[in-house]
Length: 101
Image (cartoon, rainbow, N blue to C red; front, top):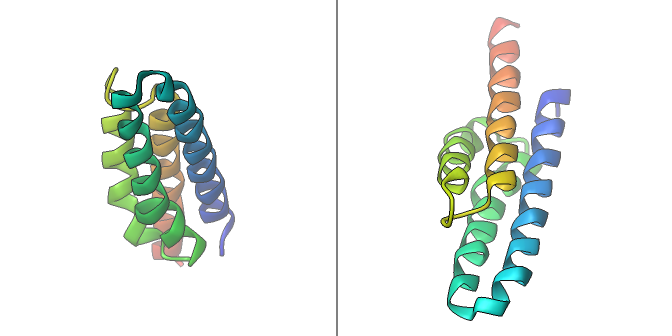
């Protein structure tokens, strides 16, 4: 796996950790706890898992869409959203470099 995909995978994992932290804080307000939990699962299955298996192109669109959704206040988390957008950038870098080779 190339360096950009490794970086993207790490960023996606950090976003999942921040979602988990959001989940813990949201447990105080139990109805809100479901939102970070859903984003954490989506981030794992749609971004992190494909990146772990070396399938960067499969995770590209999911990283961008989830990143944008999570930036919106009260829907997700700003920090995980930004990390997922950075993840998308690293995936694009990897795809562009592999297409030039």
